[in-house]
Each structure stands twice: as C-alpha cells, then as structure tokens.
Length: 450
Image 1 (spheres, rainbow, N blue to C red):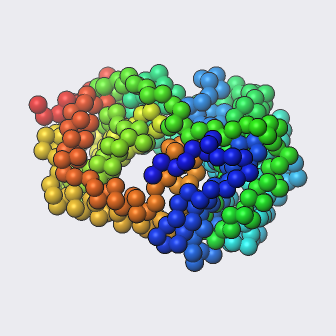
Image 2: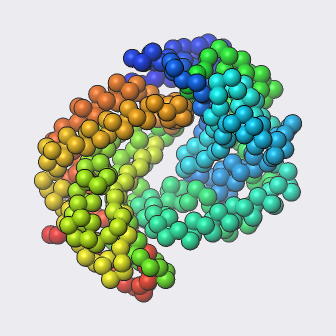
C-alpha cells in the first residue's frame, strides 16, 4: 500500500499505518520540526530493534566531498555531548545489546538491538550520537586512518573491485556510479569543516526517521525520542522530507556496454556481467525478483546447475539485483580459474539468451515463488528486518507493505510477466567486468549466442 505521506500529517499527531494479521501494529508520530517516529509492536517479542535513519547517502555528495556520509557515520561514534567512544559502546554492550551503522548511496542508518526494558537507553545513546555529535578535529584525523584502511580492504577484495567497476559503467556520470566509501584521495583531502558542513546540511530533524520494531510501546518510544532530540529542533514548523522515490525525477543513466579487464595477479578470474534494471518502486521488480531466484539464487537455480553442477566450471555463481529511487541493475557473478573464464562466460551467456527468448519453466516459477515467499516470511520474524522495512518505507520508497501484501505480490507474478521482464532486460547490450591475471587489453565476449 502507499503509506499516507507524512507531510500531510499534523505535527504532534499519531496515525496507525498498518495492522498485521499477526496482531502487529504500525504507528507513526510526526513531531514538531518534522522528525518522524514509526514503530511496529510485535506480539510475543522480547527485544527491540531501533534505527535512526537519515535521508542522505553518497549520491548526495559533491565529488570533492566523496565519502563524507560514510566518514560522518564513523565520526558519530567518536563522541557526543555526554559520552566518549568507550562510553557509547559500553552503554549498549553492558546490557547485552549491539550497536552499529551503515551508509548506502541513498541513506544512512544508526541502529541498535536491545532487550525491551533497555529501549530508553538505546534511544538515549543513538539519539545523542545523531543530535549532539562533536566531530573533534583530533577524531577526524584518527578516524581518517581507519577509513583509509577500510578502503584498502575493499581494494584487496577482487569481488568488490569487479562490482564497483560494473556500477561505474552502468550508472555513467551519476553519483550512483561512485563507491559509497569515497576514494583514498577524497578522504585524505577532506577537512573537518567539510564534514561539519555535511552534517549541518543533511542531519536536520525533518530528514530523520526513528523506527523501532519488536516489544515496543509507541507512546513510550515517542516520549524518549522527544526527550533526547527536543533541543535539536530549531524550526518547529519544518515539514518532514518526503521519501526519496517520491521526489527524485526519473533519470536515464547512460551505461557503457562491452568488456573491461582489470589486470591483477589473482588466483581466480572474477566475472561481473550486468545490465540496467528497475528502480525500487517499479512494479516490474516483482517478476524480476522471481526471475532472479530462478536464474541464480541457490543450488537449484539454473545458473548453478548449468555452470557448476553440469560443467564444473566454478565454485561460486549467482545472480543479483539492486534498485534505487531512479535506477537499478541486474547482474551475474562467477569466480573461476583464469583459463576457464572464456568458457564460463560462454555458458552464462547461453543461459541468459535462452531465458531471454523462452522465459523460465512453470516448475522454475513455482520453485522460485516458494523460495521467495518463504524467505519473506522468515525475514518477518526478525525485529531488525521489520525495523529496516519501516525505515526504508519512510526514507526511501514511500511504500509500506504488510507481509500479506508481499505474499500476494509474489503470488500474482505470472510466467508471462517473467518472460516479458527477461526479454526486456537480458536482450540489452551487456556490460562485463573481469578482474584477473590478464593483460589490460584482453577482451571477452559480451555478445553471447546470436
């Protein structure tokens, strides 16, 4: 369902958004200043998953400030108005909870999971991090080294290198093409003033959503959030920022088809093949999800059976999909011995061409639907997954689906829907990245069977 736009909800009011068949209840309160509090009470739960979501990611940065969102995520753990880094970590760990954060291309989230009685503590710790961070110059310098180590770690991961190159070529000049973490060059040049400006510009109450799921009382959660963030509000008339997919104009990203080889002295060739896909709210994402499962998820998938079981070419092969507010991708990864790369790519191309022309069988459709439906139900039993679903709905998509809605969408997918999506996506010019011990001018076939 399309959730009621939070901007249409009066500040200080609470609205019930969803009532689940399992007795769960989703409520949203809009506070003065535009900060939103969304919770899902889950009968029988004994823990609470909490998240402070900020509607800023790497695609919102200038190229000069590339990596600022991720760098800021690190720095918020370095100290608040009342706690240092040890006190932040110890406060949550001493009650058996966990605390972490992540930055994506379109949002940042600080999250914790604690026992129900410790929910006020989690709100206090995470809320202080977001609303009263210090960003001391000394912390900027020390954490700069940590992030540079993280960048080096990713550059040593050949799968990440291949995926980043594929993204860069599929998303063209868009900031979606660049790594969330930034580059070593941008991090070395980033000043404390740059990070502080980024914080002041993007970390405003109207851009923040607090979500919680599990054994949570909504009224209590709202009281705790107001207590921690009340002094942060400077404009009590500010309205909530709409979900990104509701305010991002449709964009056509110019991809670069063909093959690029990244020469590295690896033991395996890492193959990434991709095509432009769908945005996170495109209705065709449902048949694509079923296609993805049938084609390349699990040991019963067609790619696994053809490339690994029948030919013995790889240990790992799978398909993947991702969606943003205005773009997406669908792709295949395989890792193989360097002398088997040509044959591996040939077999993958044969599989993709067959599916593009004929779709998938009824048995594959039924098996993929069952796998997707089961995974959705199992995921719904995790409070952290429910918390994330609320945050993504408010900050990113503007769509909140109940579990029954999700199952219905999966069941409504037809073989014709899947065939149409397969033909549309898999007949596009393909982008191929290969990382391995080859000369940089080495080429691999991206045309497939004609």
